[in-house]
Length: 165
Ligand code: GDP
Ligand code: MG
Image (tube, rainbow, N blue to C red; front, top):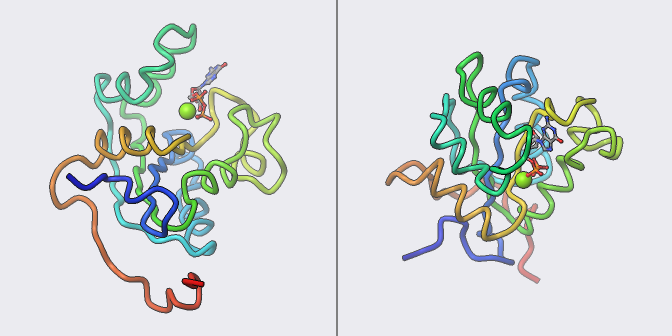
């Protein structure tokens, strides 16, 4: 079946981006959306969710052995604020999305990146983005795996954003 992350290396490539509960509390949702929209990327999925512990543990499965894992899962899933989950589509969106977000530790995030503009603590770094095509596939299917949750549509004026030559 067709990959939920689109076709790697084409304009159909997709990534999973989420504003985490601290980012939601701080009113950063619109700033994240604005940056991806302004860049020329296309929003194909969006929802507010309080993820279950099980979903959060699966999402962060590679970090299970870390000392901060329990705290991370608690703060993502305790419902003090939702996670704003999104899927963005466009050329090189996985790598470019990571670059726009900045380094995991905001004290190492370049000025101009989302974390570099808005964050100072690794445990409150506001936003998630898939780190590879394989992660994007896994994460999109975890958060947006039900039929009909992602919308195929054509952005008005996309020919002024993406050229085929
Ligand atoms: P990311 O892909 O840049 O988000 O970073 P990772 O995949 O390495 O880690 C996932 C998330 O776990 C990070 O975004 C942080 O929220 C959290 N995290 C990572 N390292 C630490 C740490 O050393 N301390 C704490 N408290 N949280 C961390
Ligand atoms: Mg990661």
